[in-house]
Image (cartoon, one colour):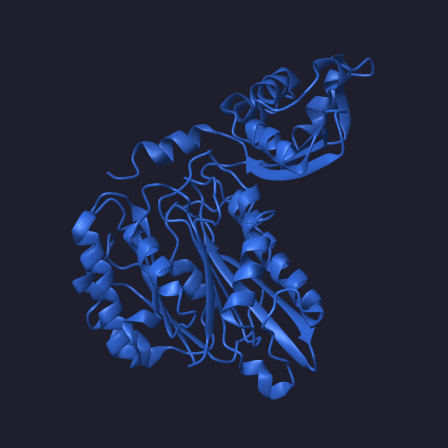
Length: 413
């Protein structure tokens, strides 16, 4: 975990209300570093629905495989998250560690291991000593309380410089529904169906199937539209839990994601995901600039996404932004290499609303001093107009600084 907080960190930490049916506790189990909270236990009431999306990496972690297998039942009572060790590329030892962790948690909660979900983040390839959870999870089960969201978010951090939290309140039927989310992620970020680690909780009465549809739809333009360094983690996990506790206050039970009564909730739910995803981009390792790439006029949304990611993942584009250089030549390069339909002579590029290139050449109105001033802003928007169709998309990233190399050069040592 970095000691200096990112200059792009949100100025305010949201007040996280309690969610009926959810209790949290965090502690230090000594997974990698002594004295810092590195394990989170979330306890959910009986009947809680669960949904999840995970990394599409062909080398997933043991906890990802565990969660995928348990998700089919659609019910959850506990969530155990540890930082400091990803329990990835750990073979049979890793699978044994997940089984042992779930067994210890199930005993502490009085539930079955199939109702315990797991997530791990940290170093890849190091065996996870799950015996360190013995005793700790029992104590956490006794201490768990409805609050403690900030402590929970801190416990799952690795190279993150600030805890990531988001909340929303929305009407469902006659009831006020709360949605709370926490996330971690700062490096090895190019999500593919999920994110680094993120957990969303609500008291809405939603079945697992409807929640799964909501979650899969929600990640596309939020977590899947964020990239820090183009590297998809082995551990990407996004889990959502719905306790159903708001039913006693008049919230209707929702069994289909297409239910019209769910419209406002779905918007708020996606808003929480989007908030968390932007915080991840703001905490990119060594980042000094939040960068928004907008691509318009592509042949399709999918094509616009590929072009936007090509620009967002370009080390040359990202280092130019770090140097406050509006180097549109590098943007042209990244558009051209994306493998998507583009026409050099229709291409226009703007930095923070200032047109720097149009119709395949430098803009006649280009003013170096004006653009240089714009590049000093902490948020940089690169707008790319292709003139090929109606496809549009947006991707968030950050700049690439010397600090990124420093953080990752000694991550294991």
